[in-house]
Image (cartoon, rainbow, N blue to C red; front, top):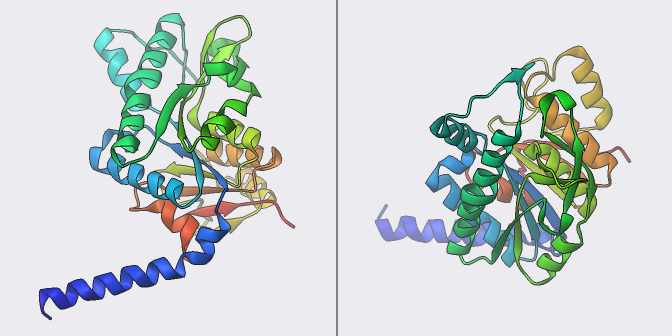
Length: 289
């Protein structure tokens, strides 16, 4: 086949794909979609560029994306550089005053602004903020033993609505404000779930490094209910790092989010596959009925 023939075939396939996406484009026009992006994905420049391009495309076709990001690897790197030692309780880092200062510096600074710039480089209009801005996310201590680790108890989504109404894309660092002026580090998934519930989002997409929730045979379950998740967790089928993500999904759905999807953020165009194709991606969780 001549090169121009192969190119023509690719163009035809692209046009066909766009045509098939029309019902989904109409379905999500005006819908709020909260996306949690993990810190590991943000360390890869090419992956960041691809993610940013997908987010801008979503915004361009009428979706209202809201991005919540992590940054664990970057935090660990900076703590090591500064010689700040970490103490752990049951595998969880104790966040003292010195540590939370570094966490805020990394998440609200380097990581947040890097993601904002990546989206803007693709033609979007992103604006970076943390949960402390406009008291977006007020927290109580999640566990006194862990120090400045917060659990969101009040989320004021009005500022996010205002940003979205201006055609801009909020990019949120999971840093919360305490009732007495403290700064709290918040788990990224937890923050995304609380923000999605406050926005009554149509979708919460939790990007991770696995294909989705798997059954006892190792098969990815494409659709699940909260009752299934509860049973699989009790049986031990859902375990380890997947538990916090499914707990976030259950809390978000209970809070009014229409559906949550746990999907592999390493897959090319994962968000677009989930929203705009028959195929979908990962495990979709929603209430029955």
